[in-house]
Length: 93
Image 1 (spheres, rainbow, N blue to C red):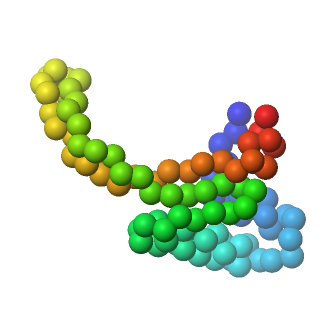
Image 2 (image 1 turned 180 degrees about the horizontal axis):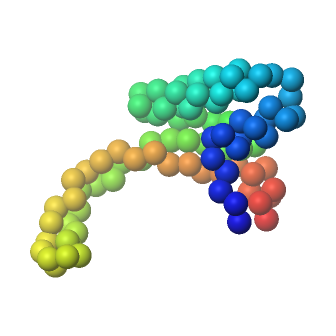
């Protein structure tokens, strides 16, 4: 199983459409920035057929330090979540 990083994704896109590598990198960077900015504002981002990005709040909870076995408080935080869309789920089956 191969790991596809940003460079491999850019190369694959350049091979399929008539854009330069620099243009494709700019599009990907802009897309990631816009998704990040929307999530930072608390908005949900839906790409039809692919999936939905959203933010979720985790409550504070008690945990255990695995090295010392001491109880610690893990603070509340906001985390990004991704839910795959129907088309993506069916394509991966």
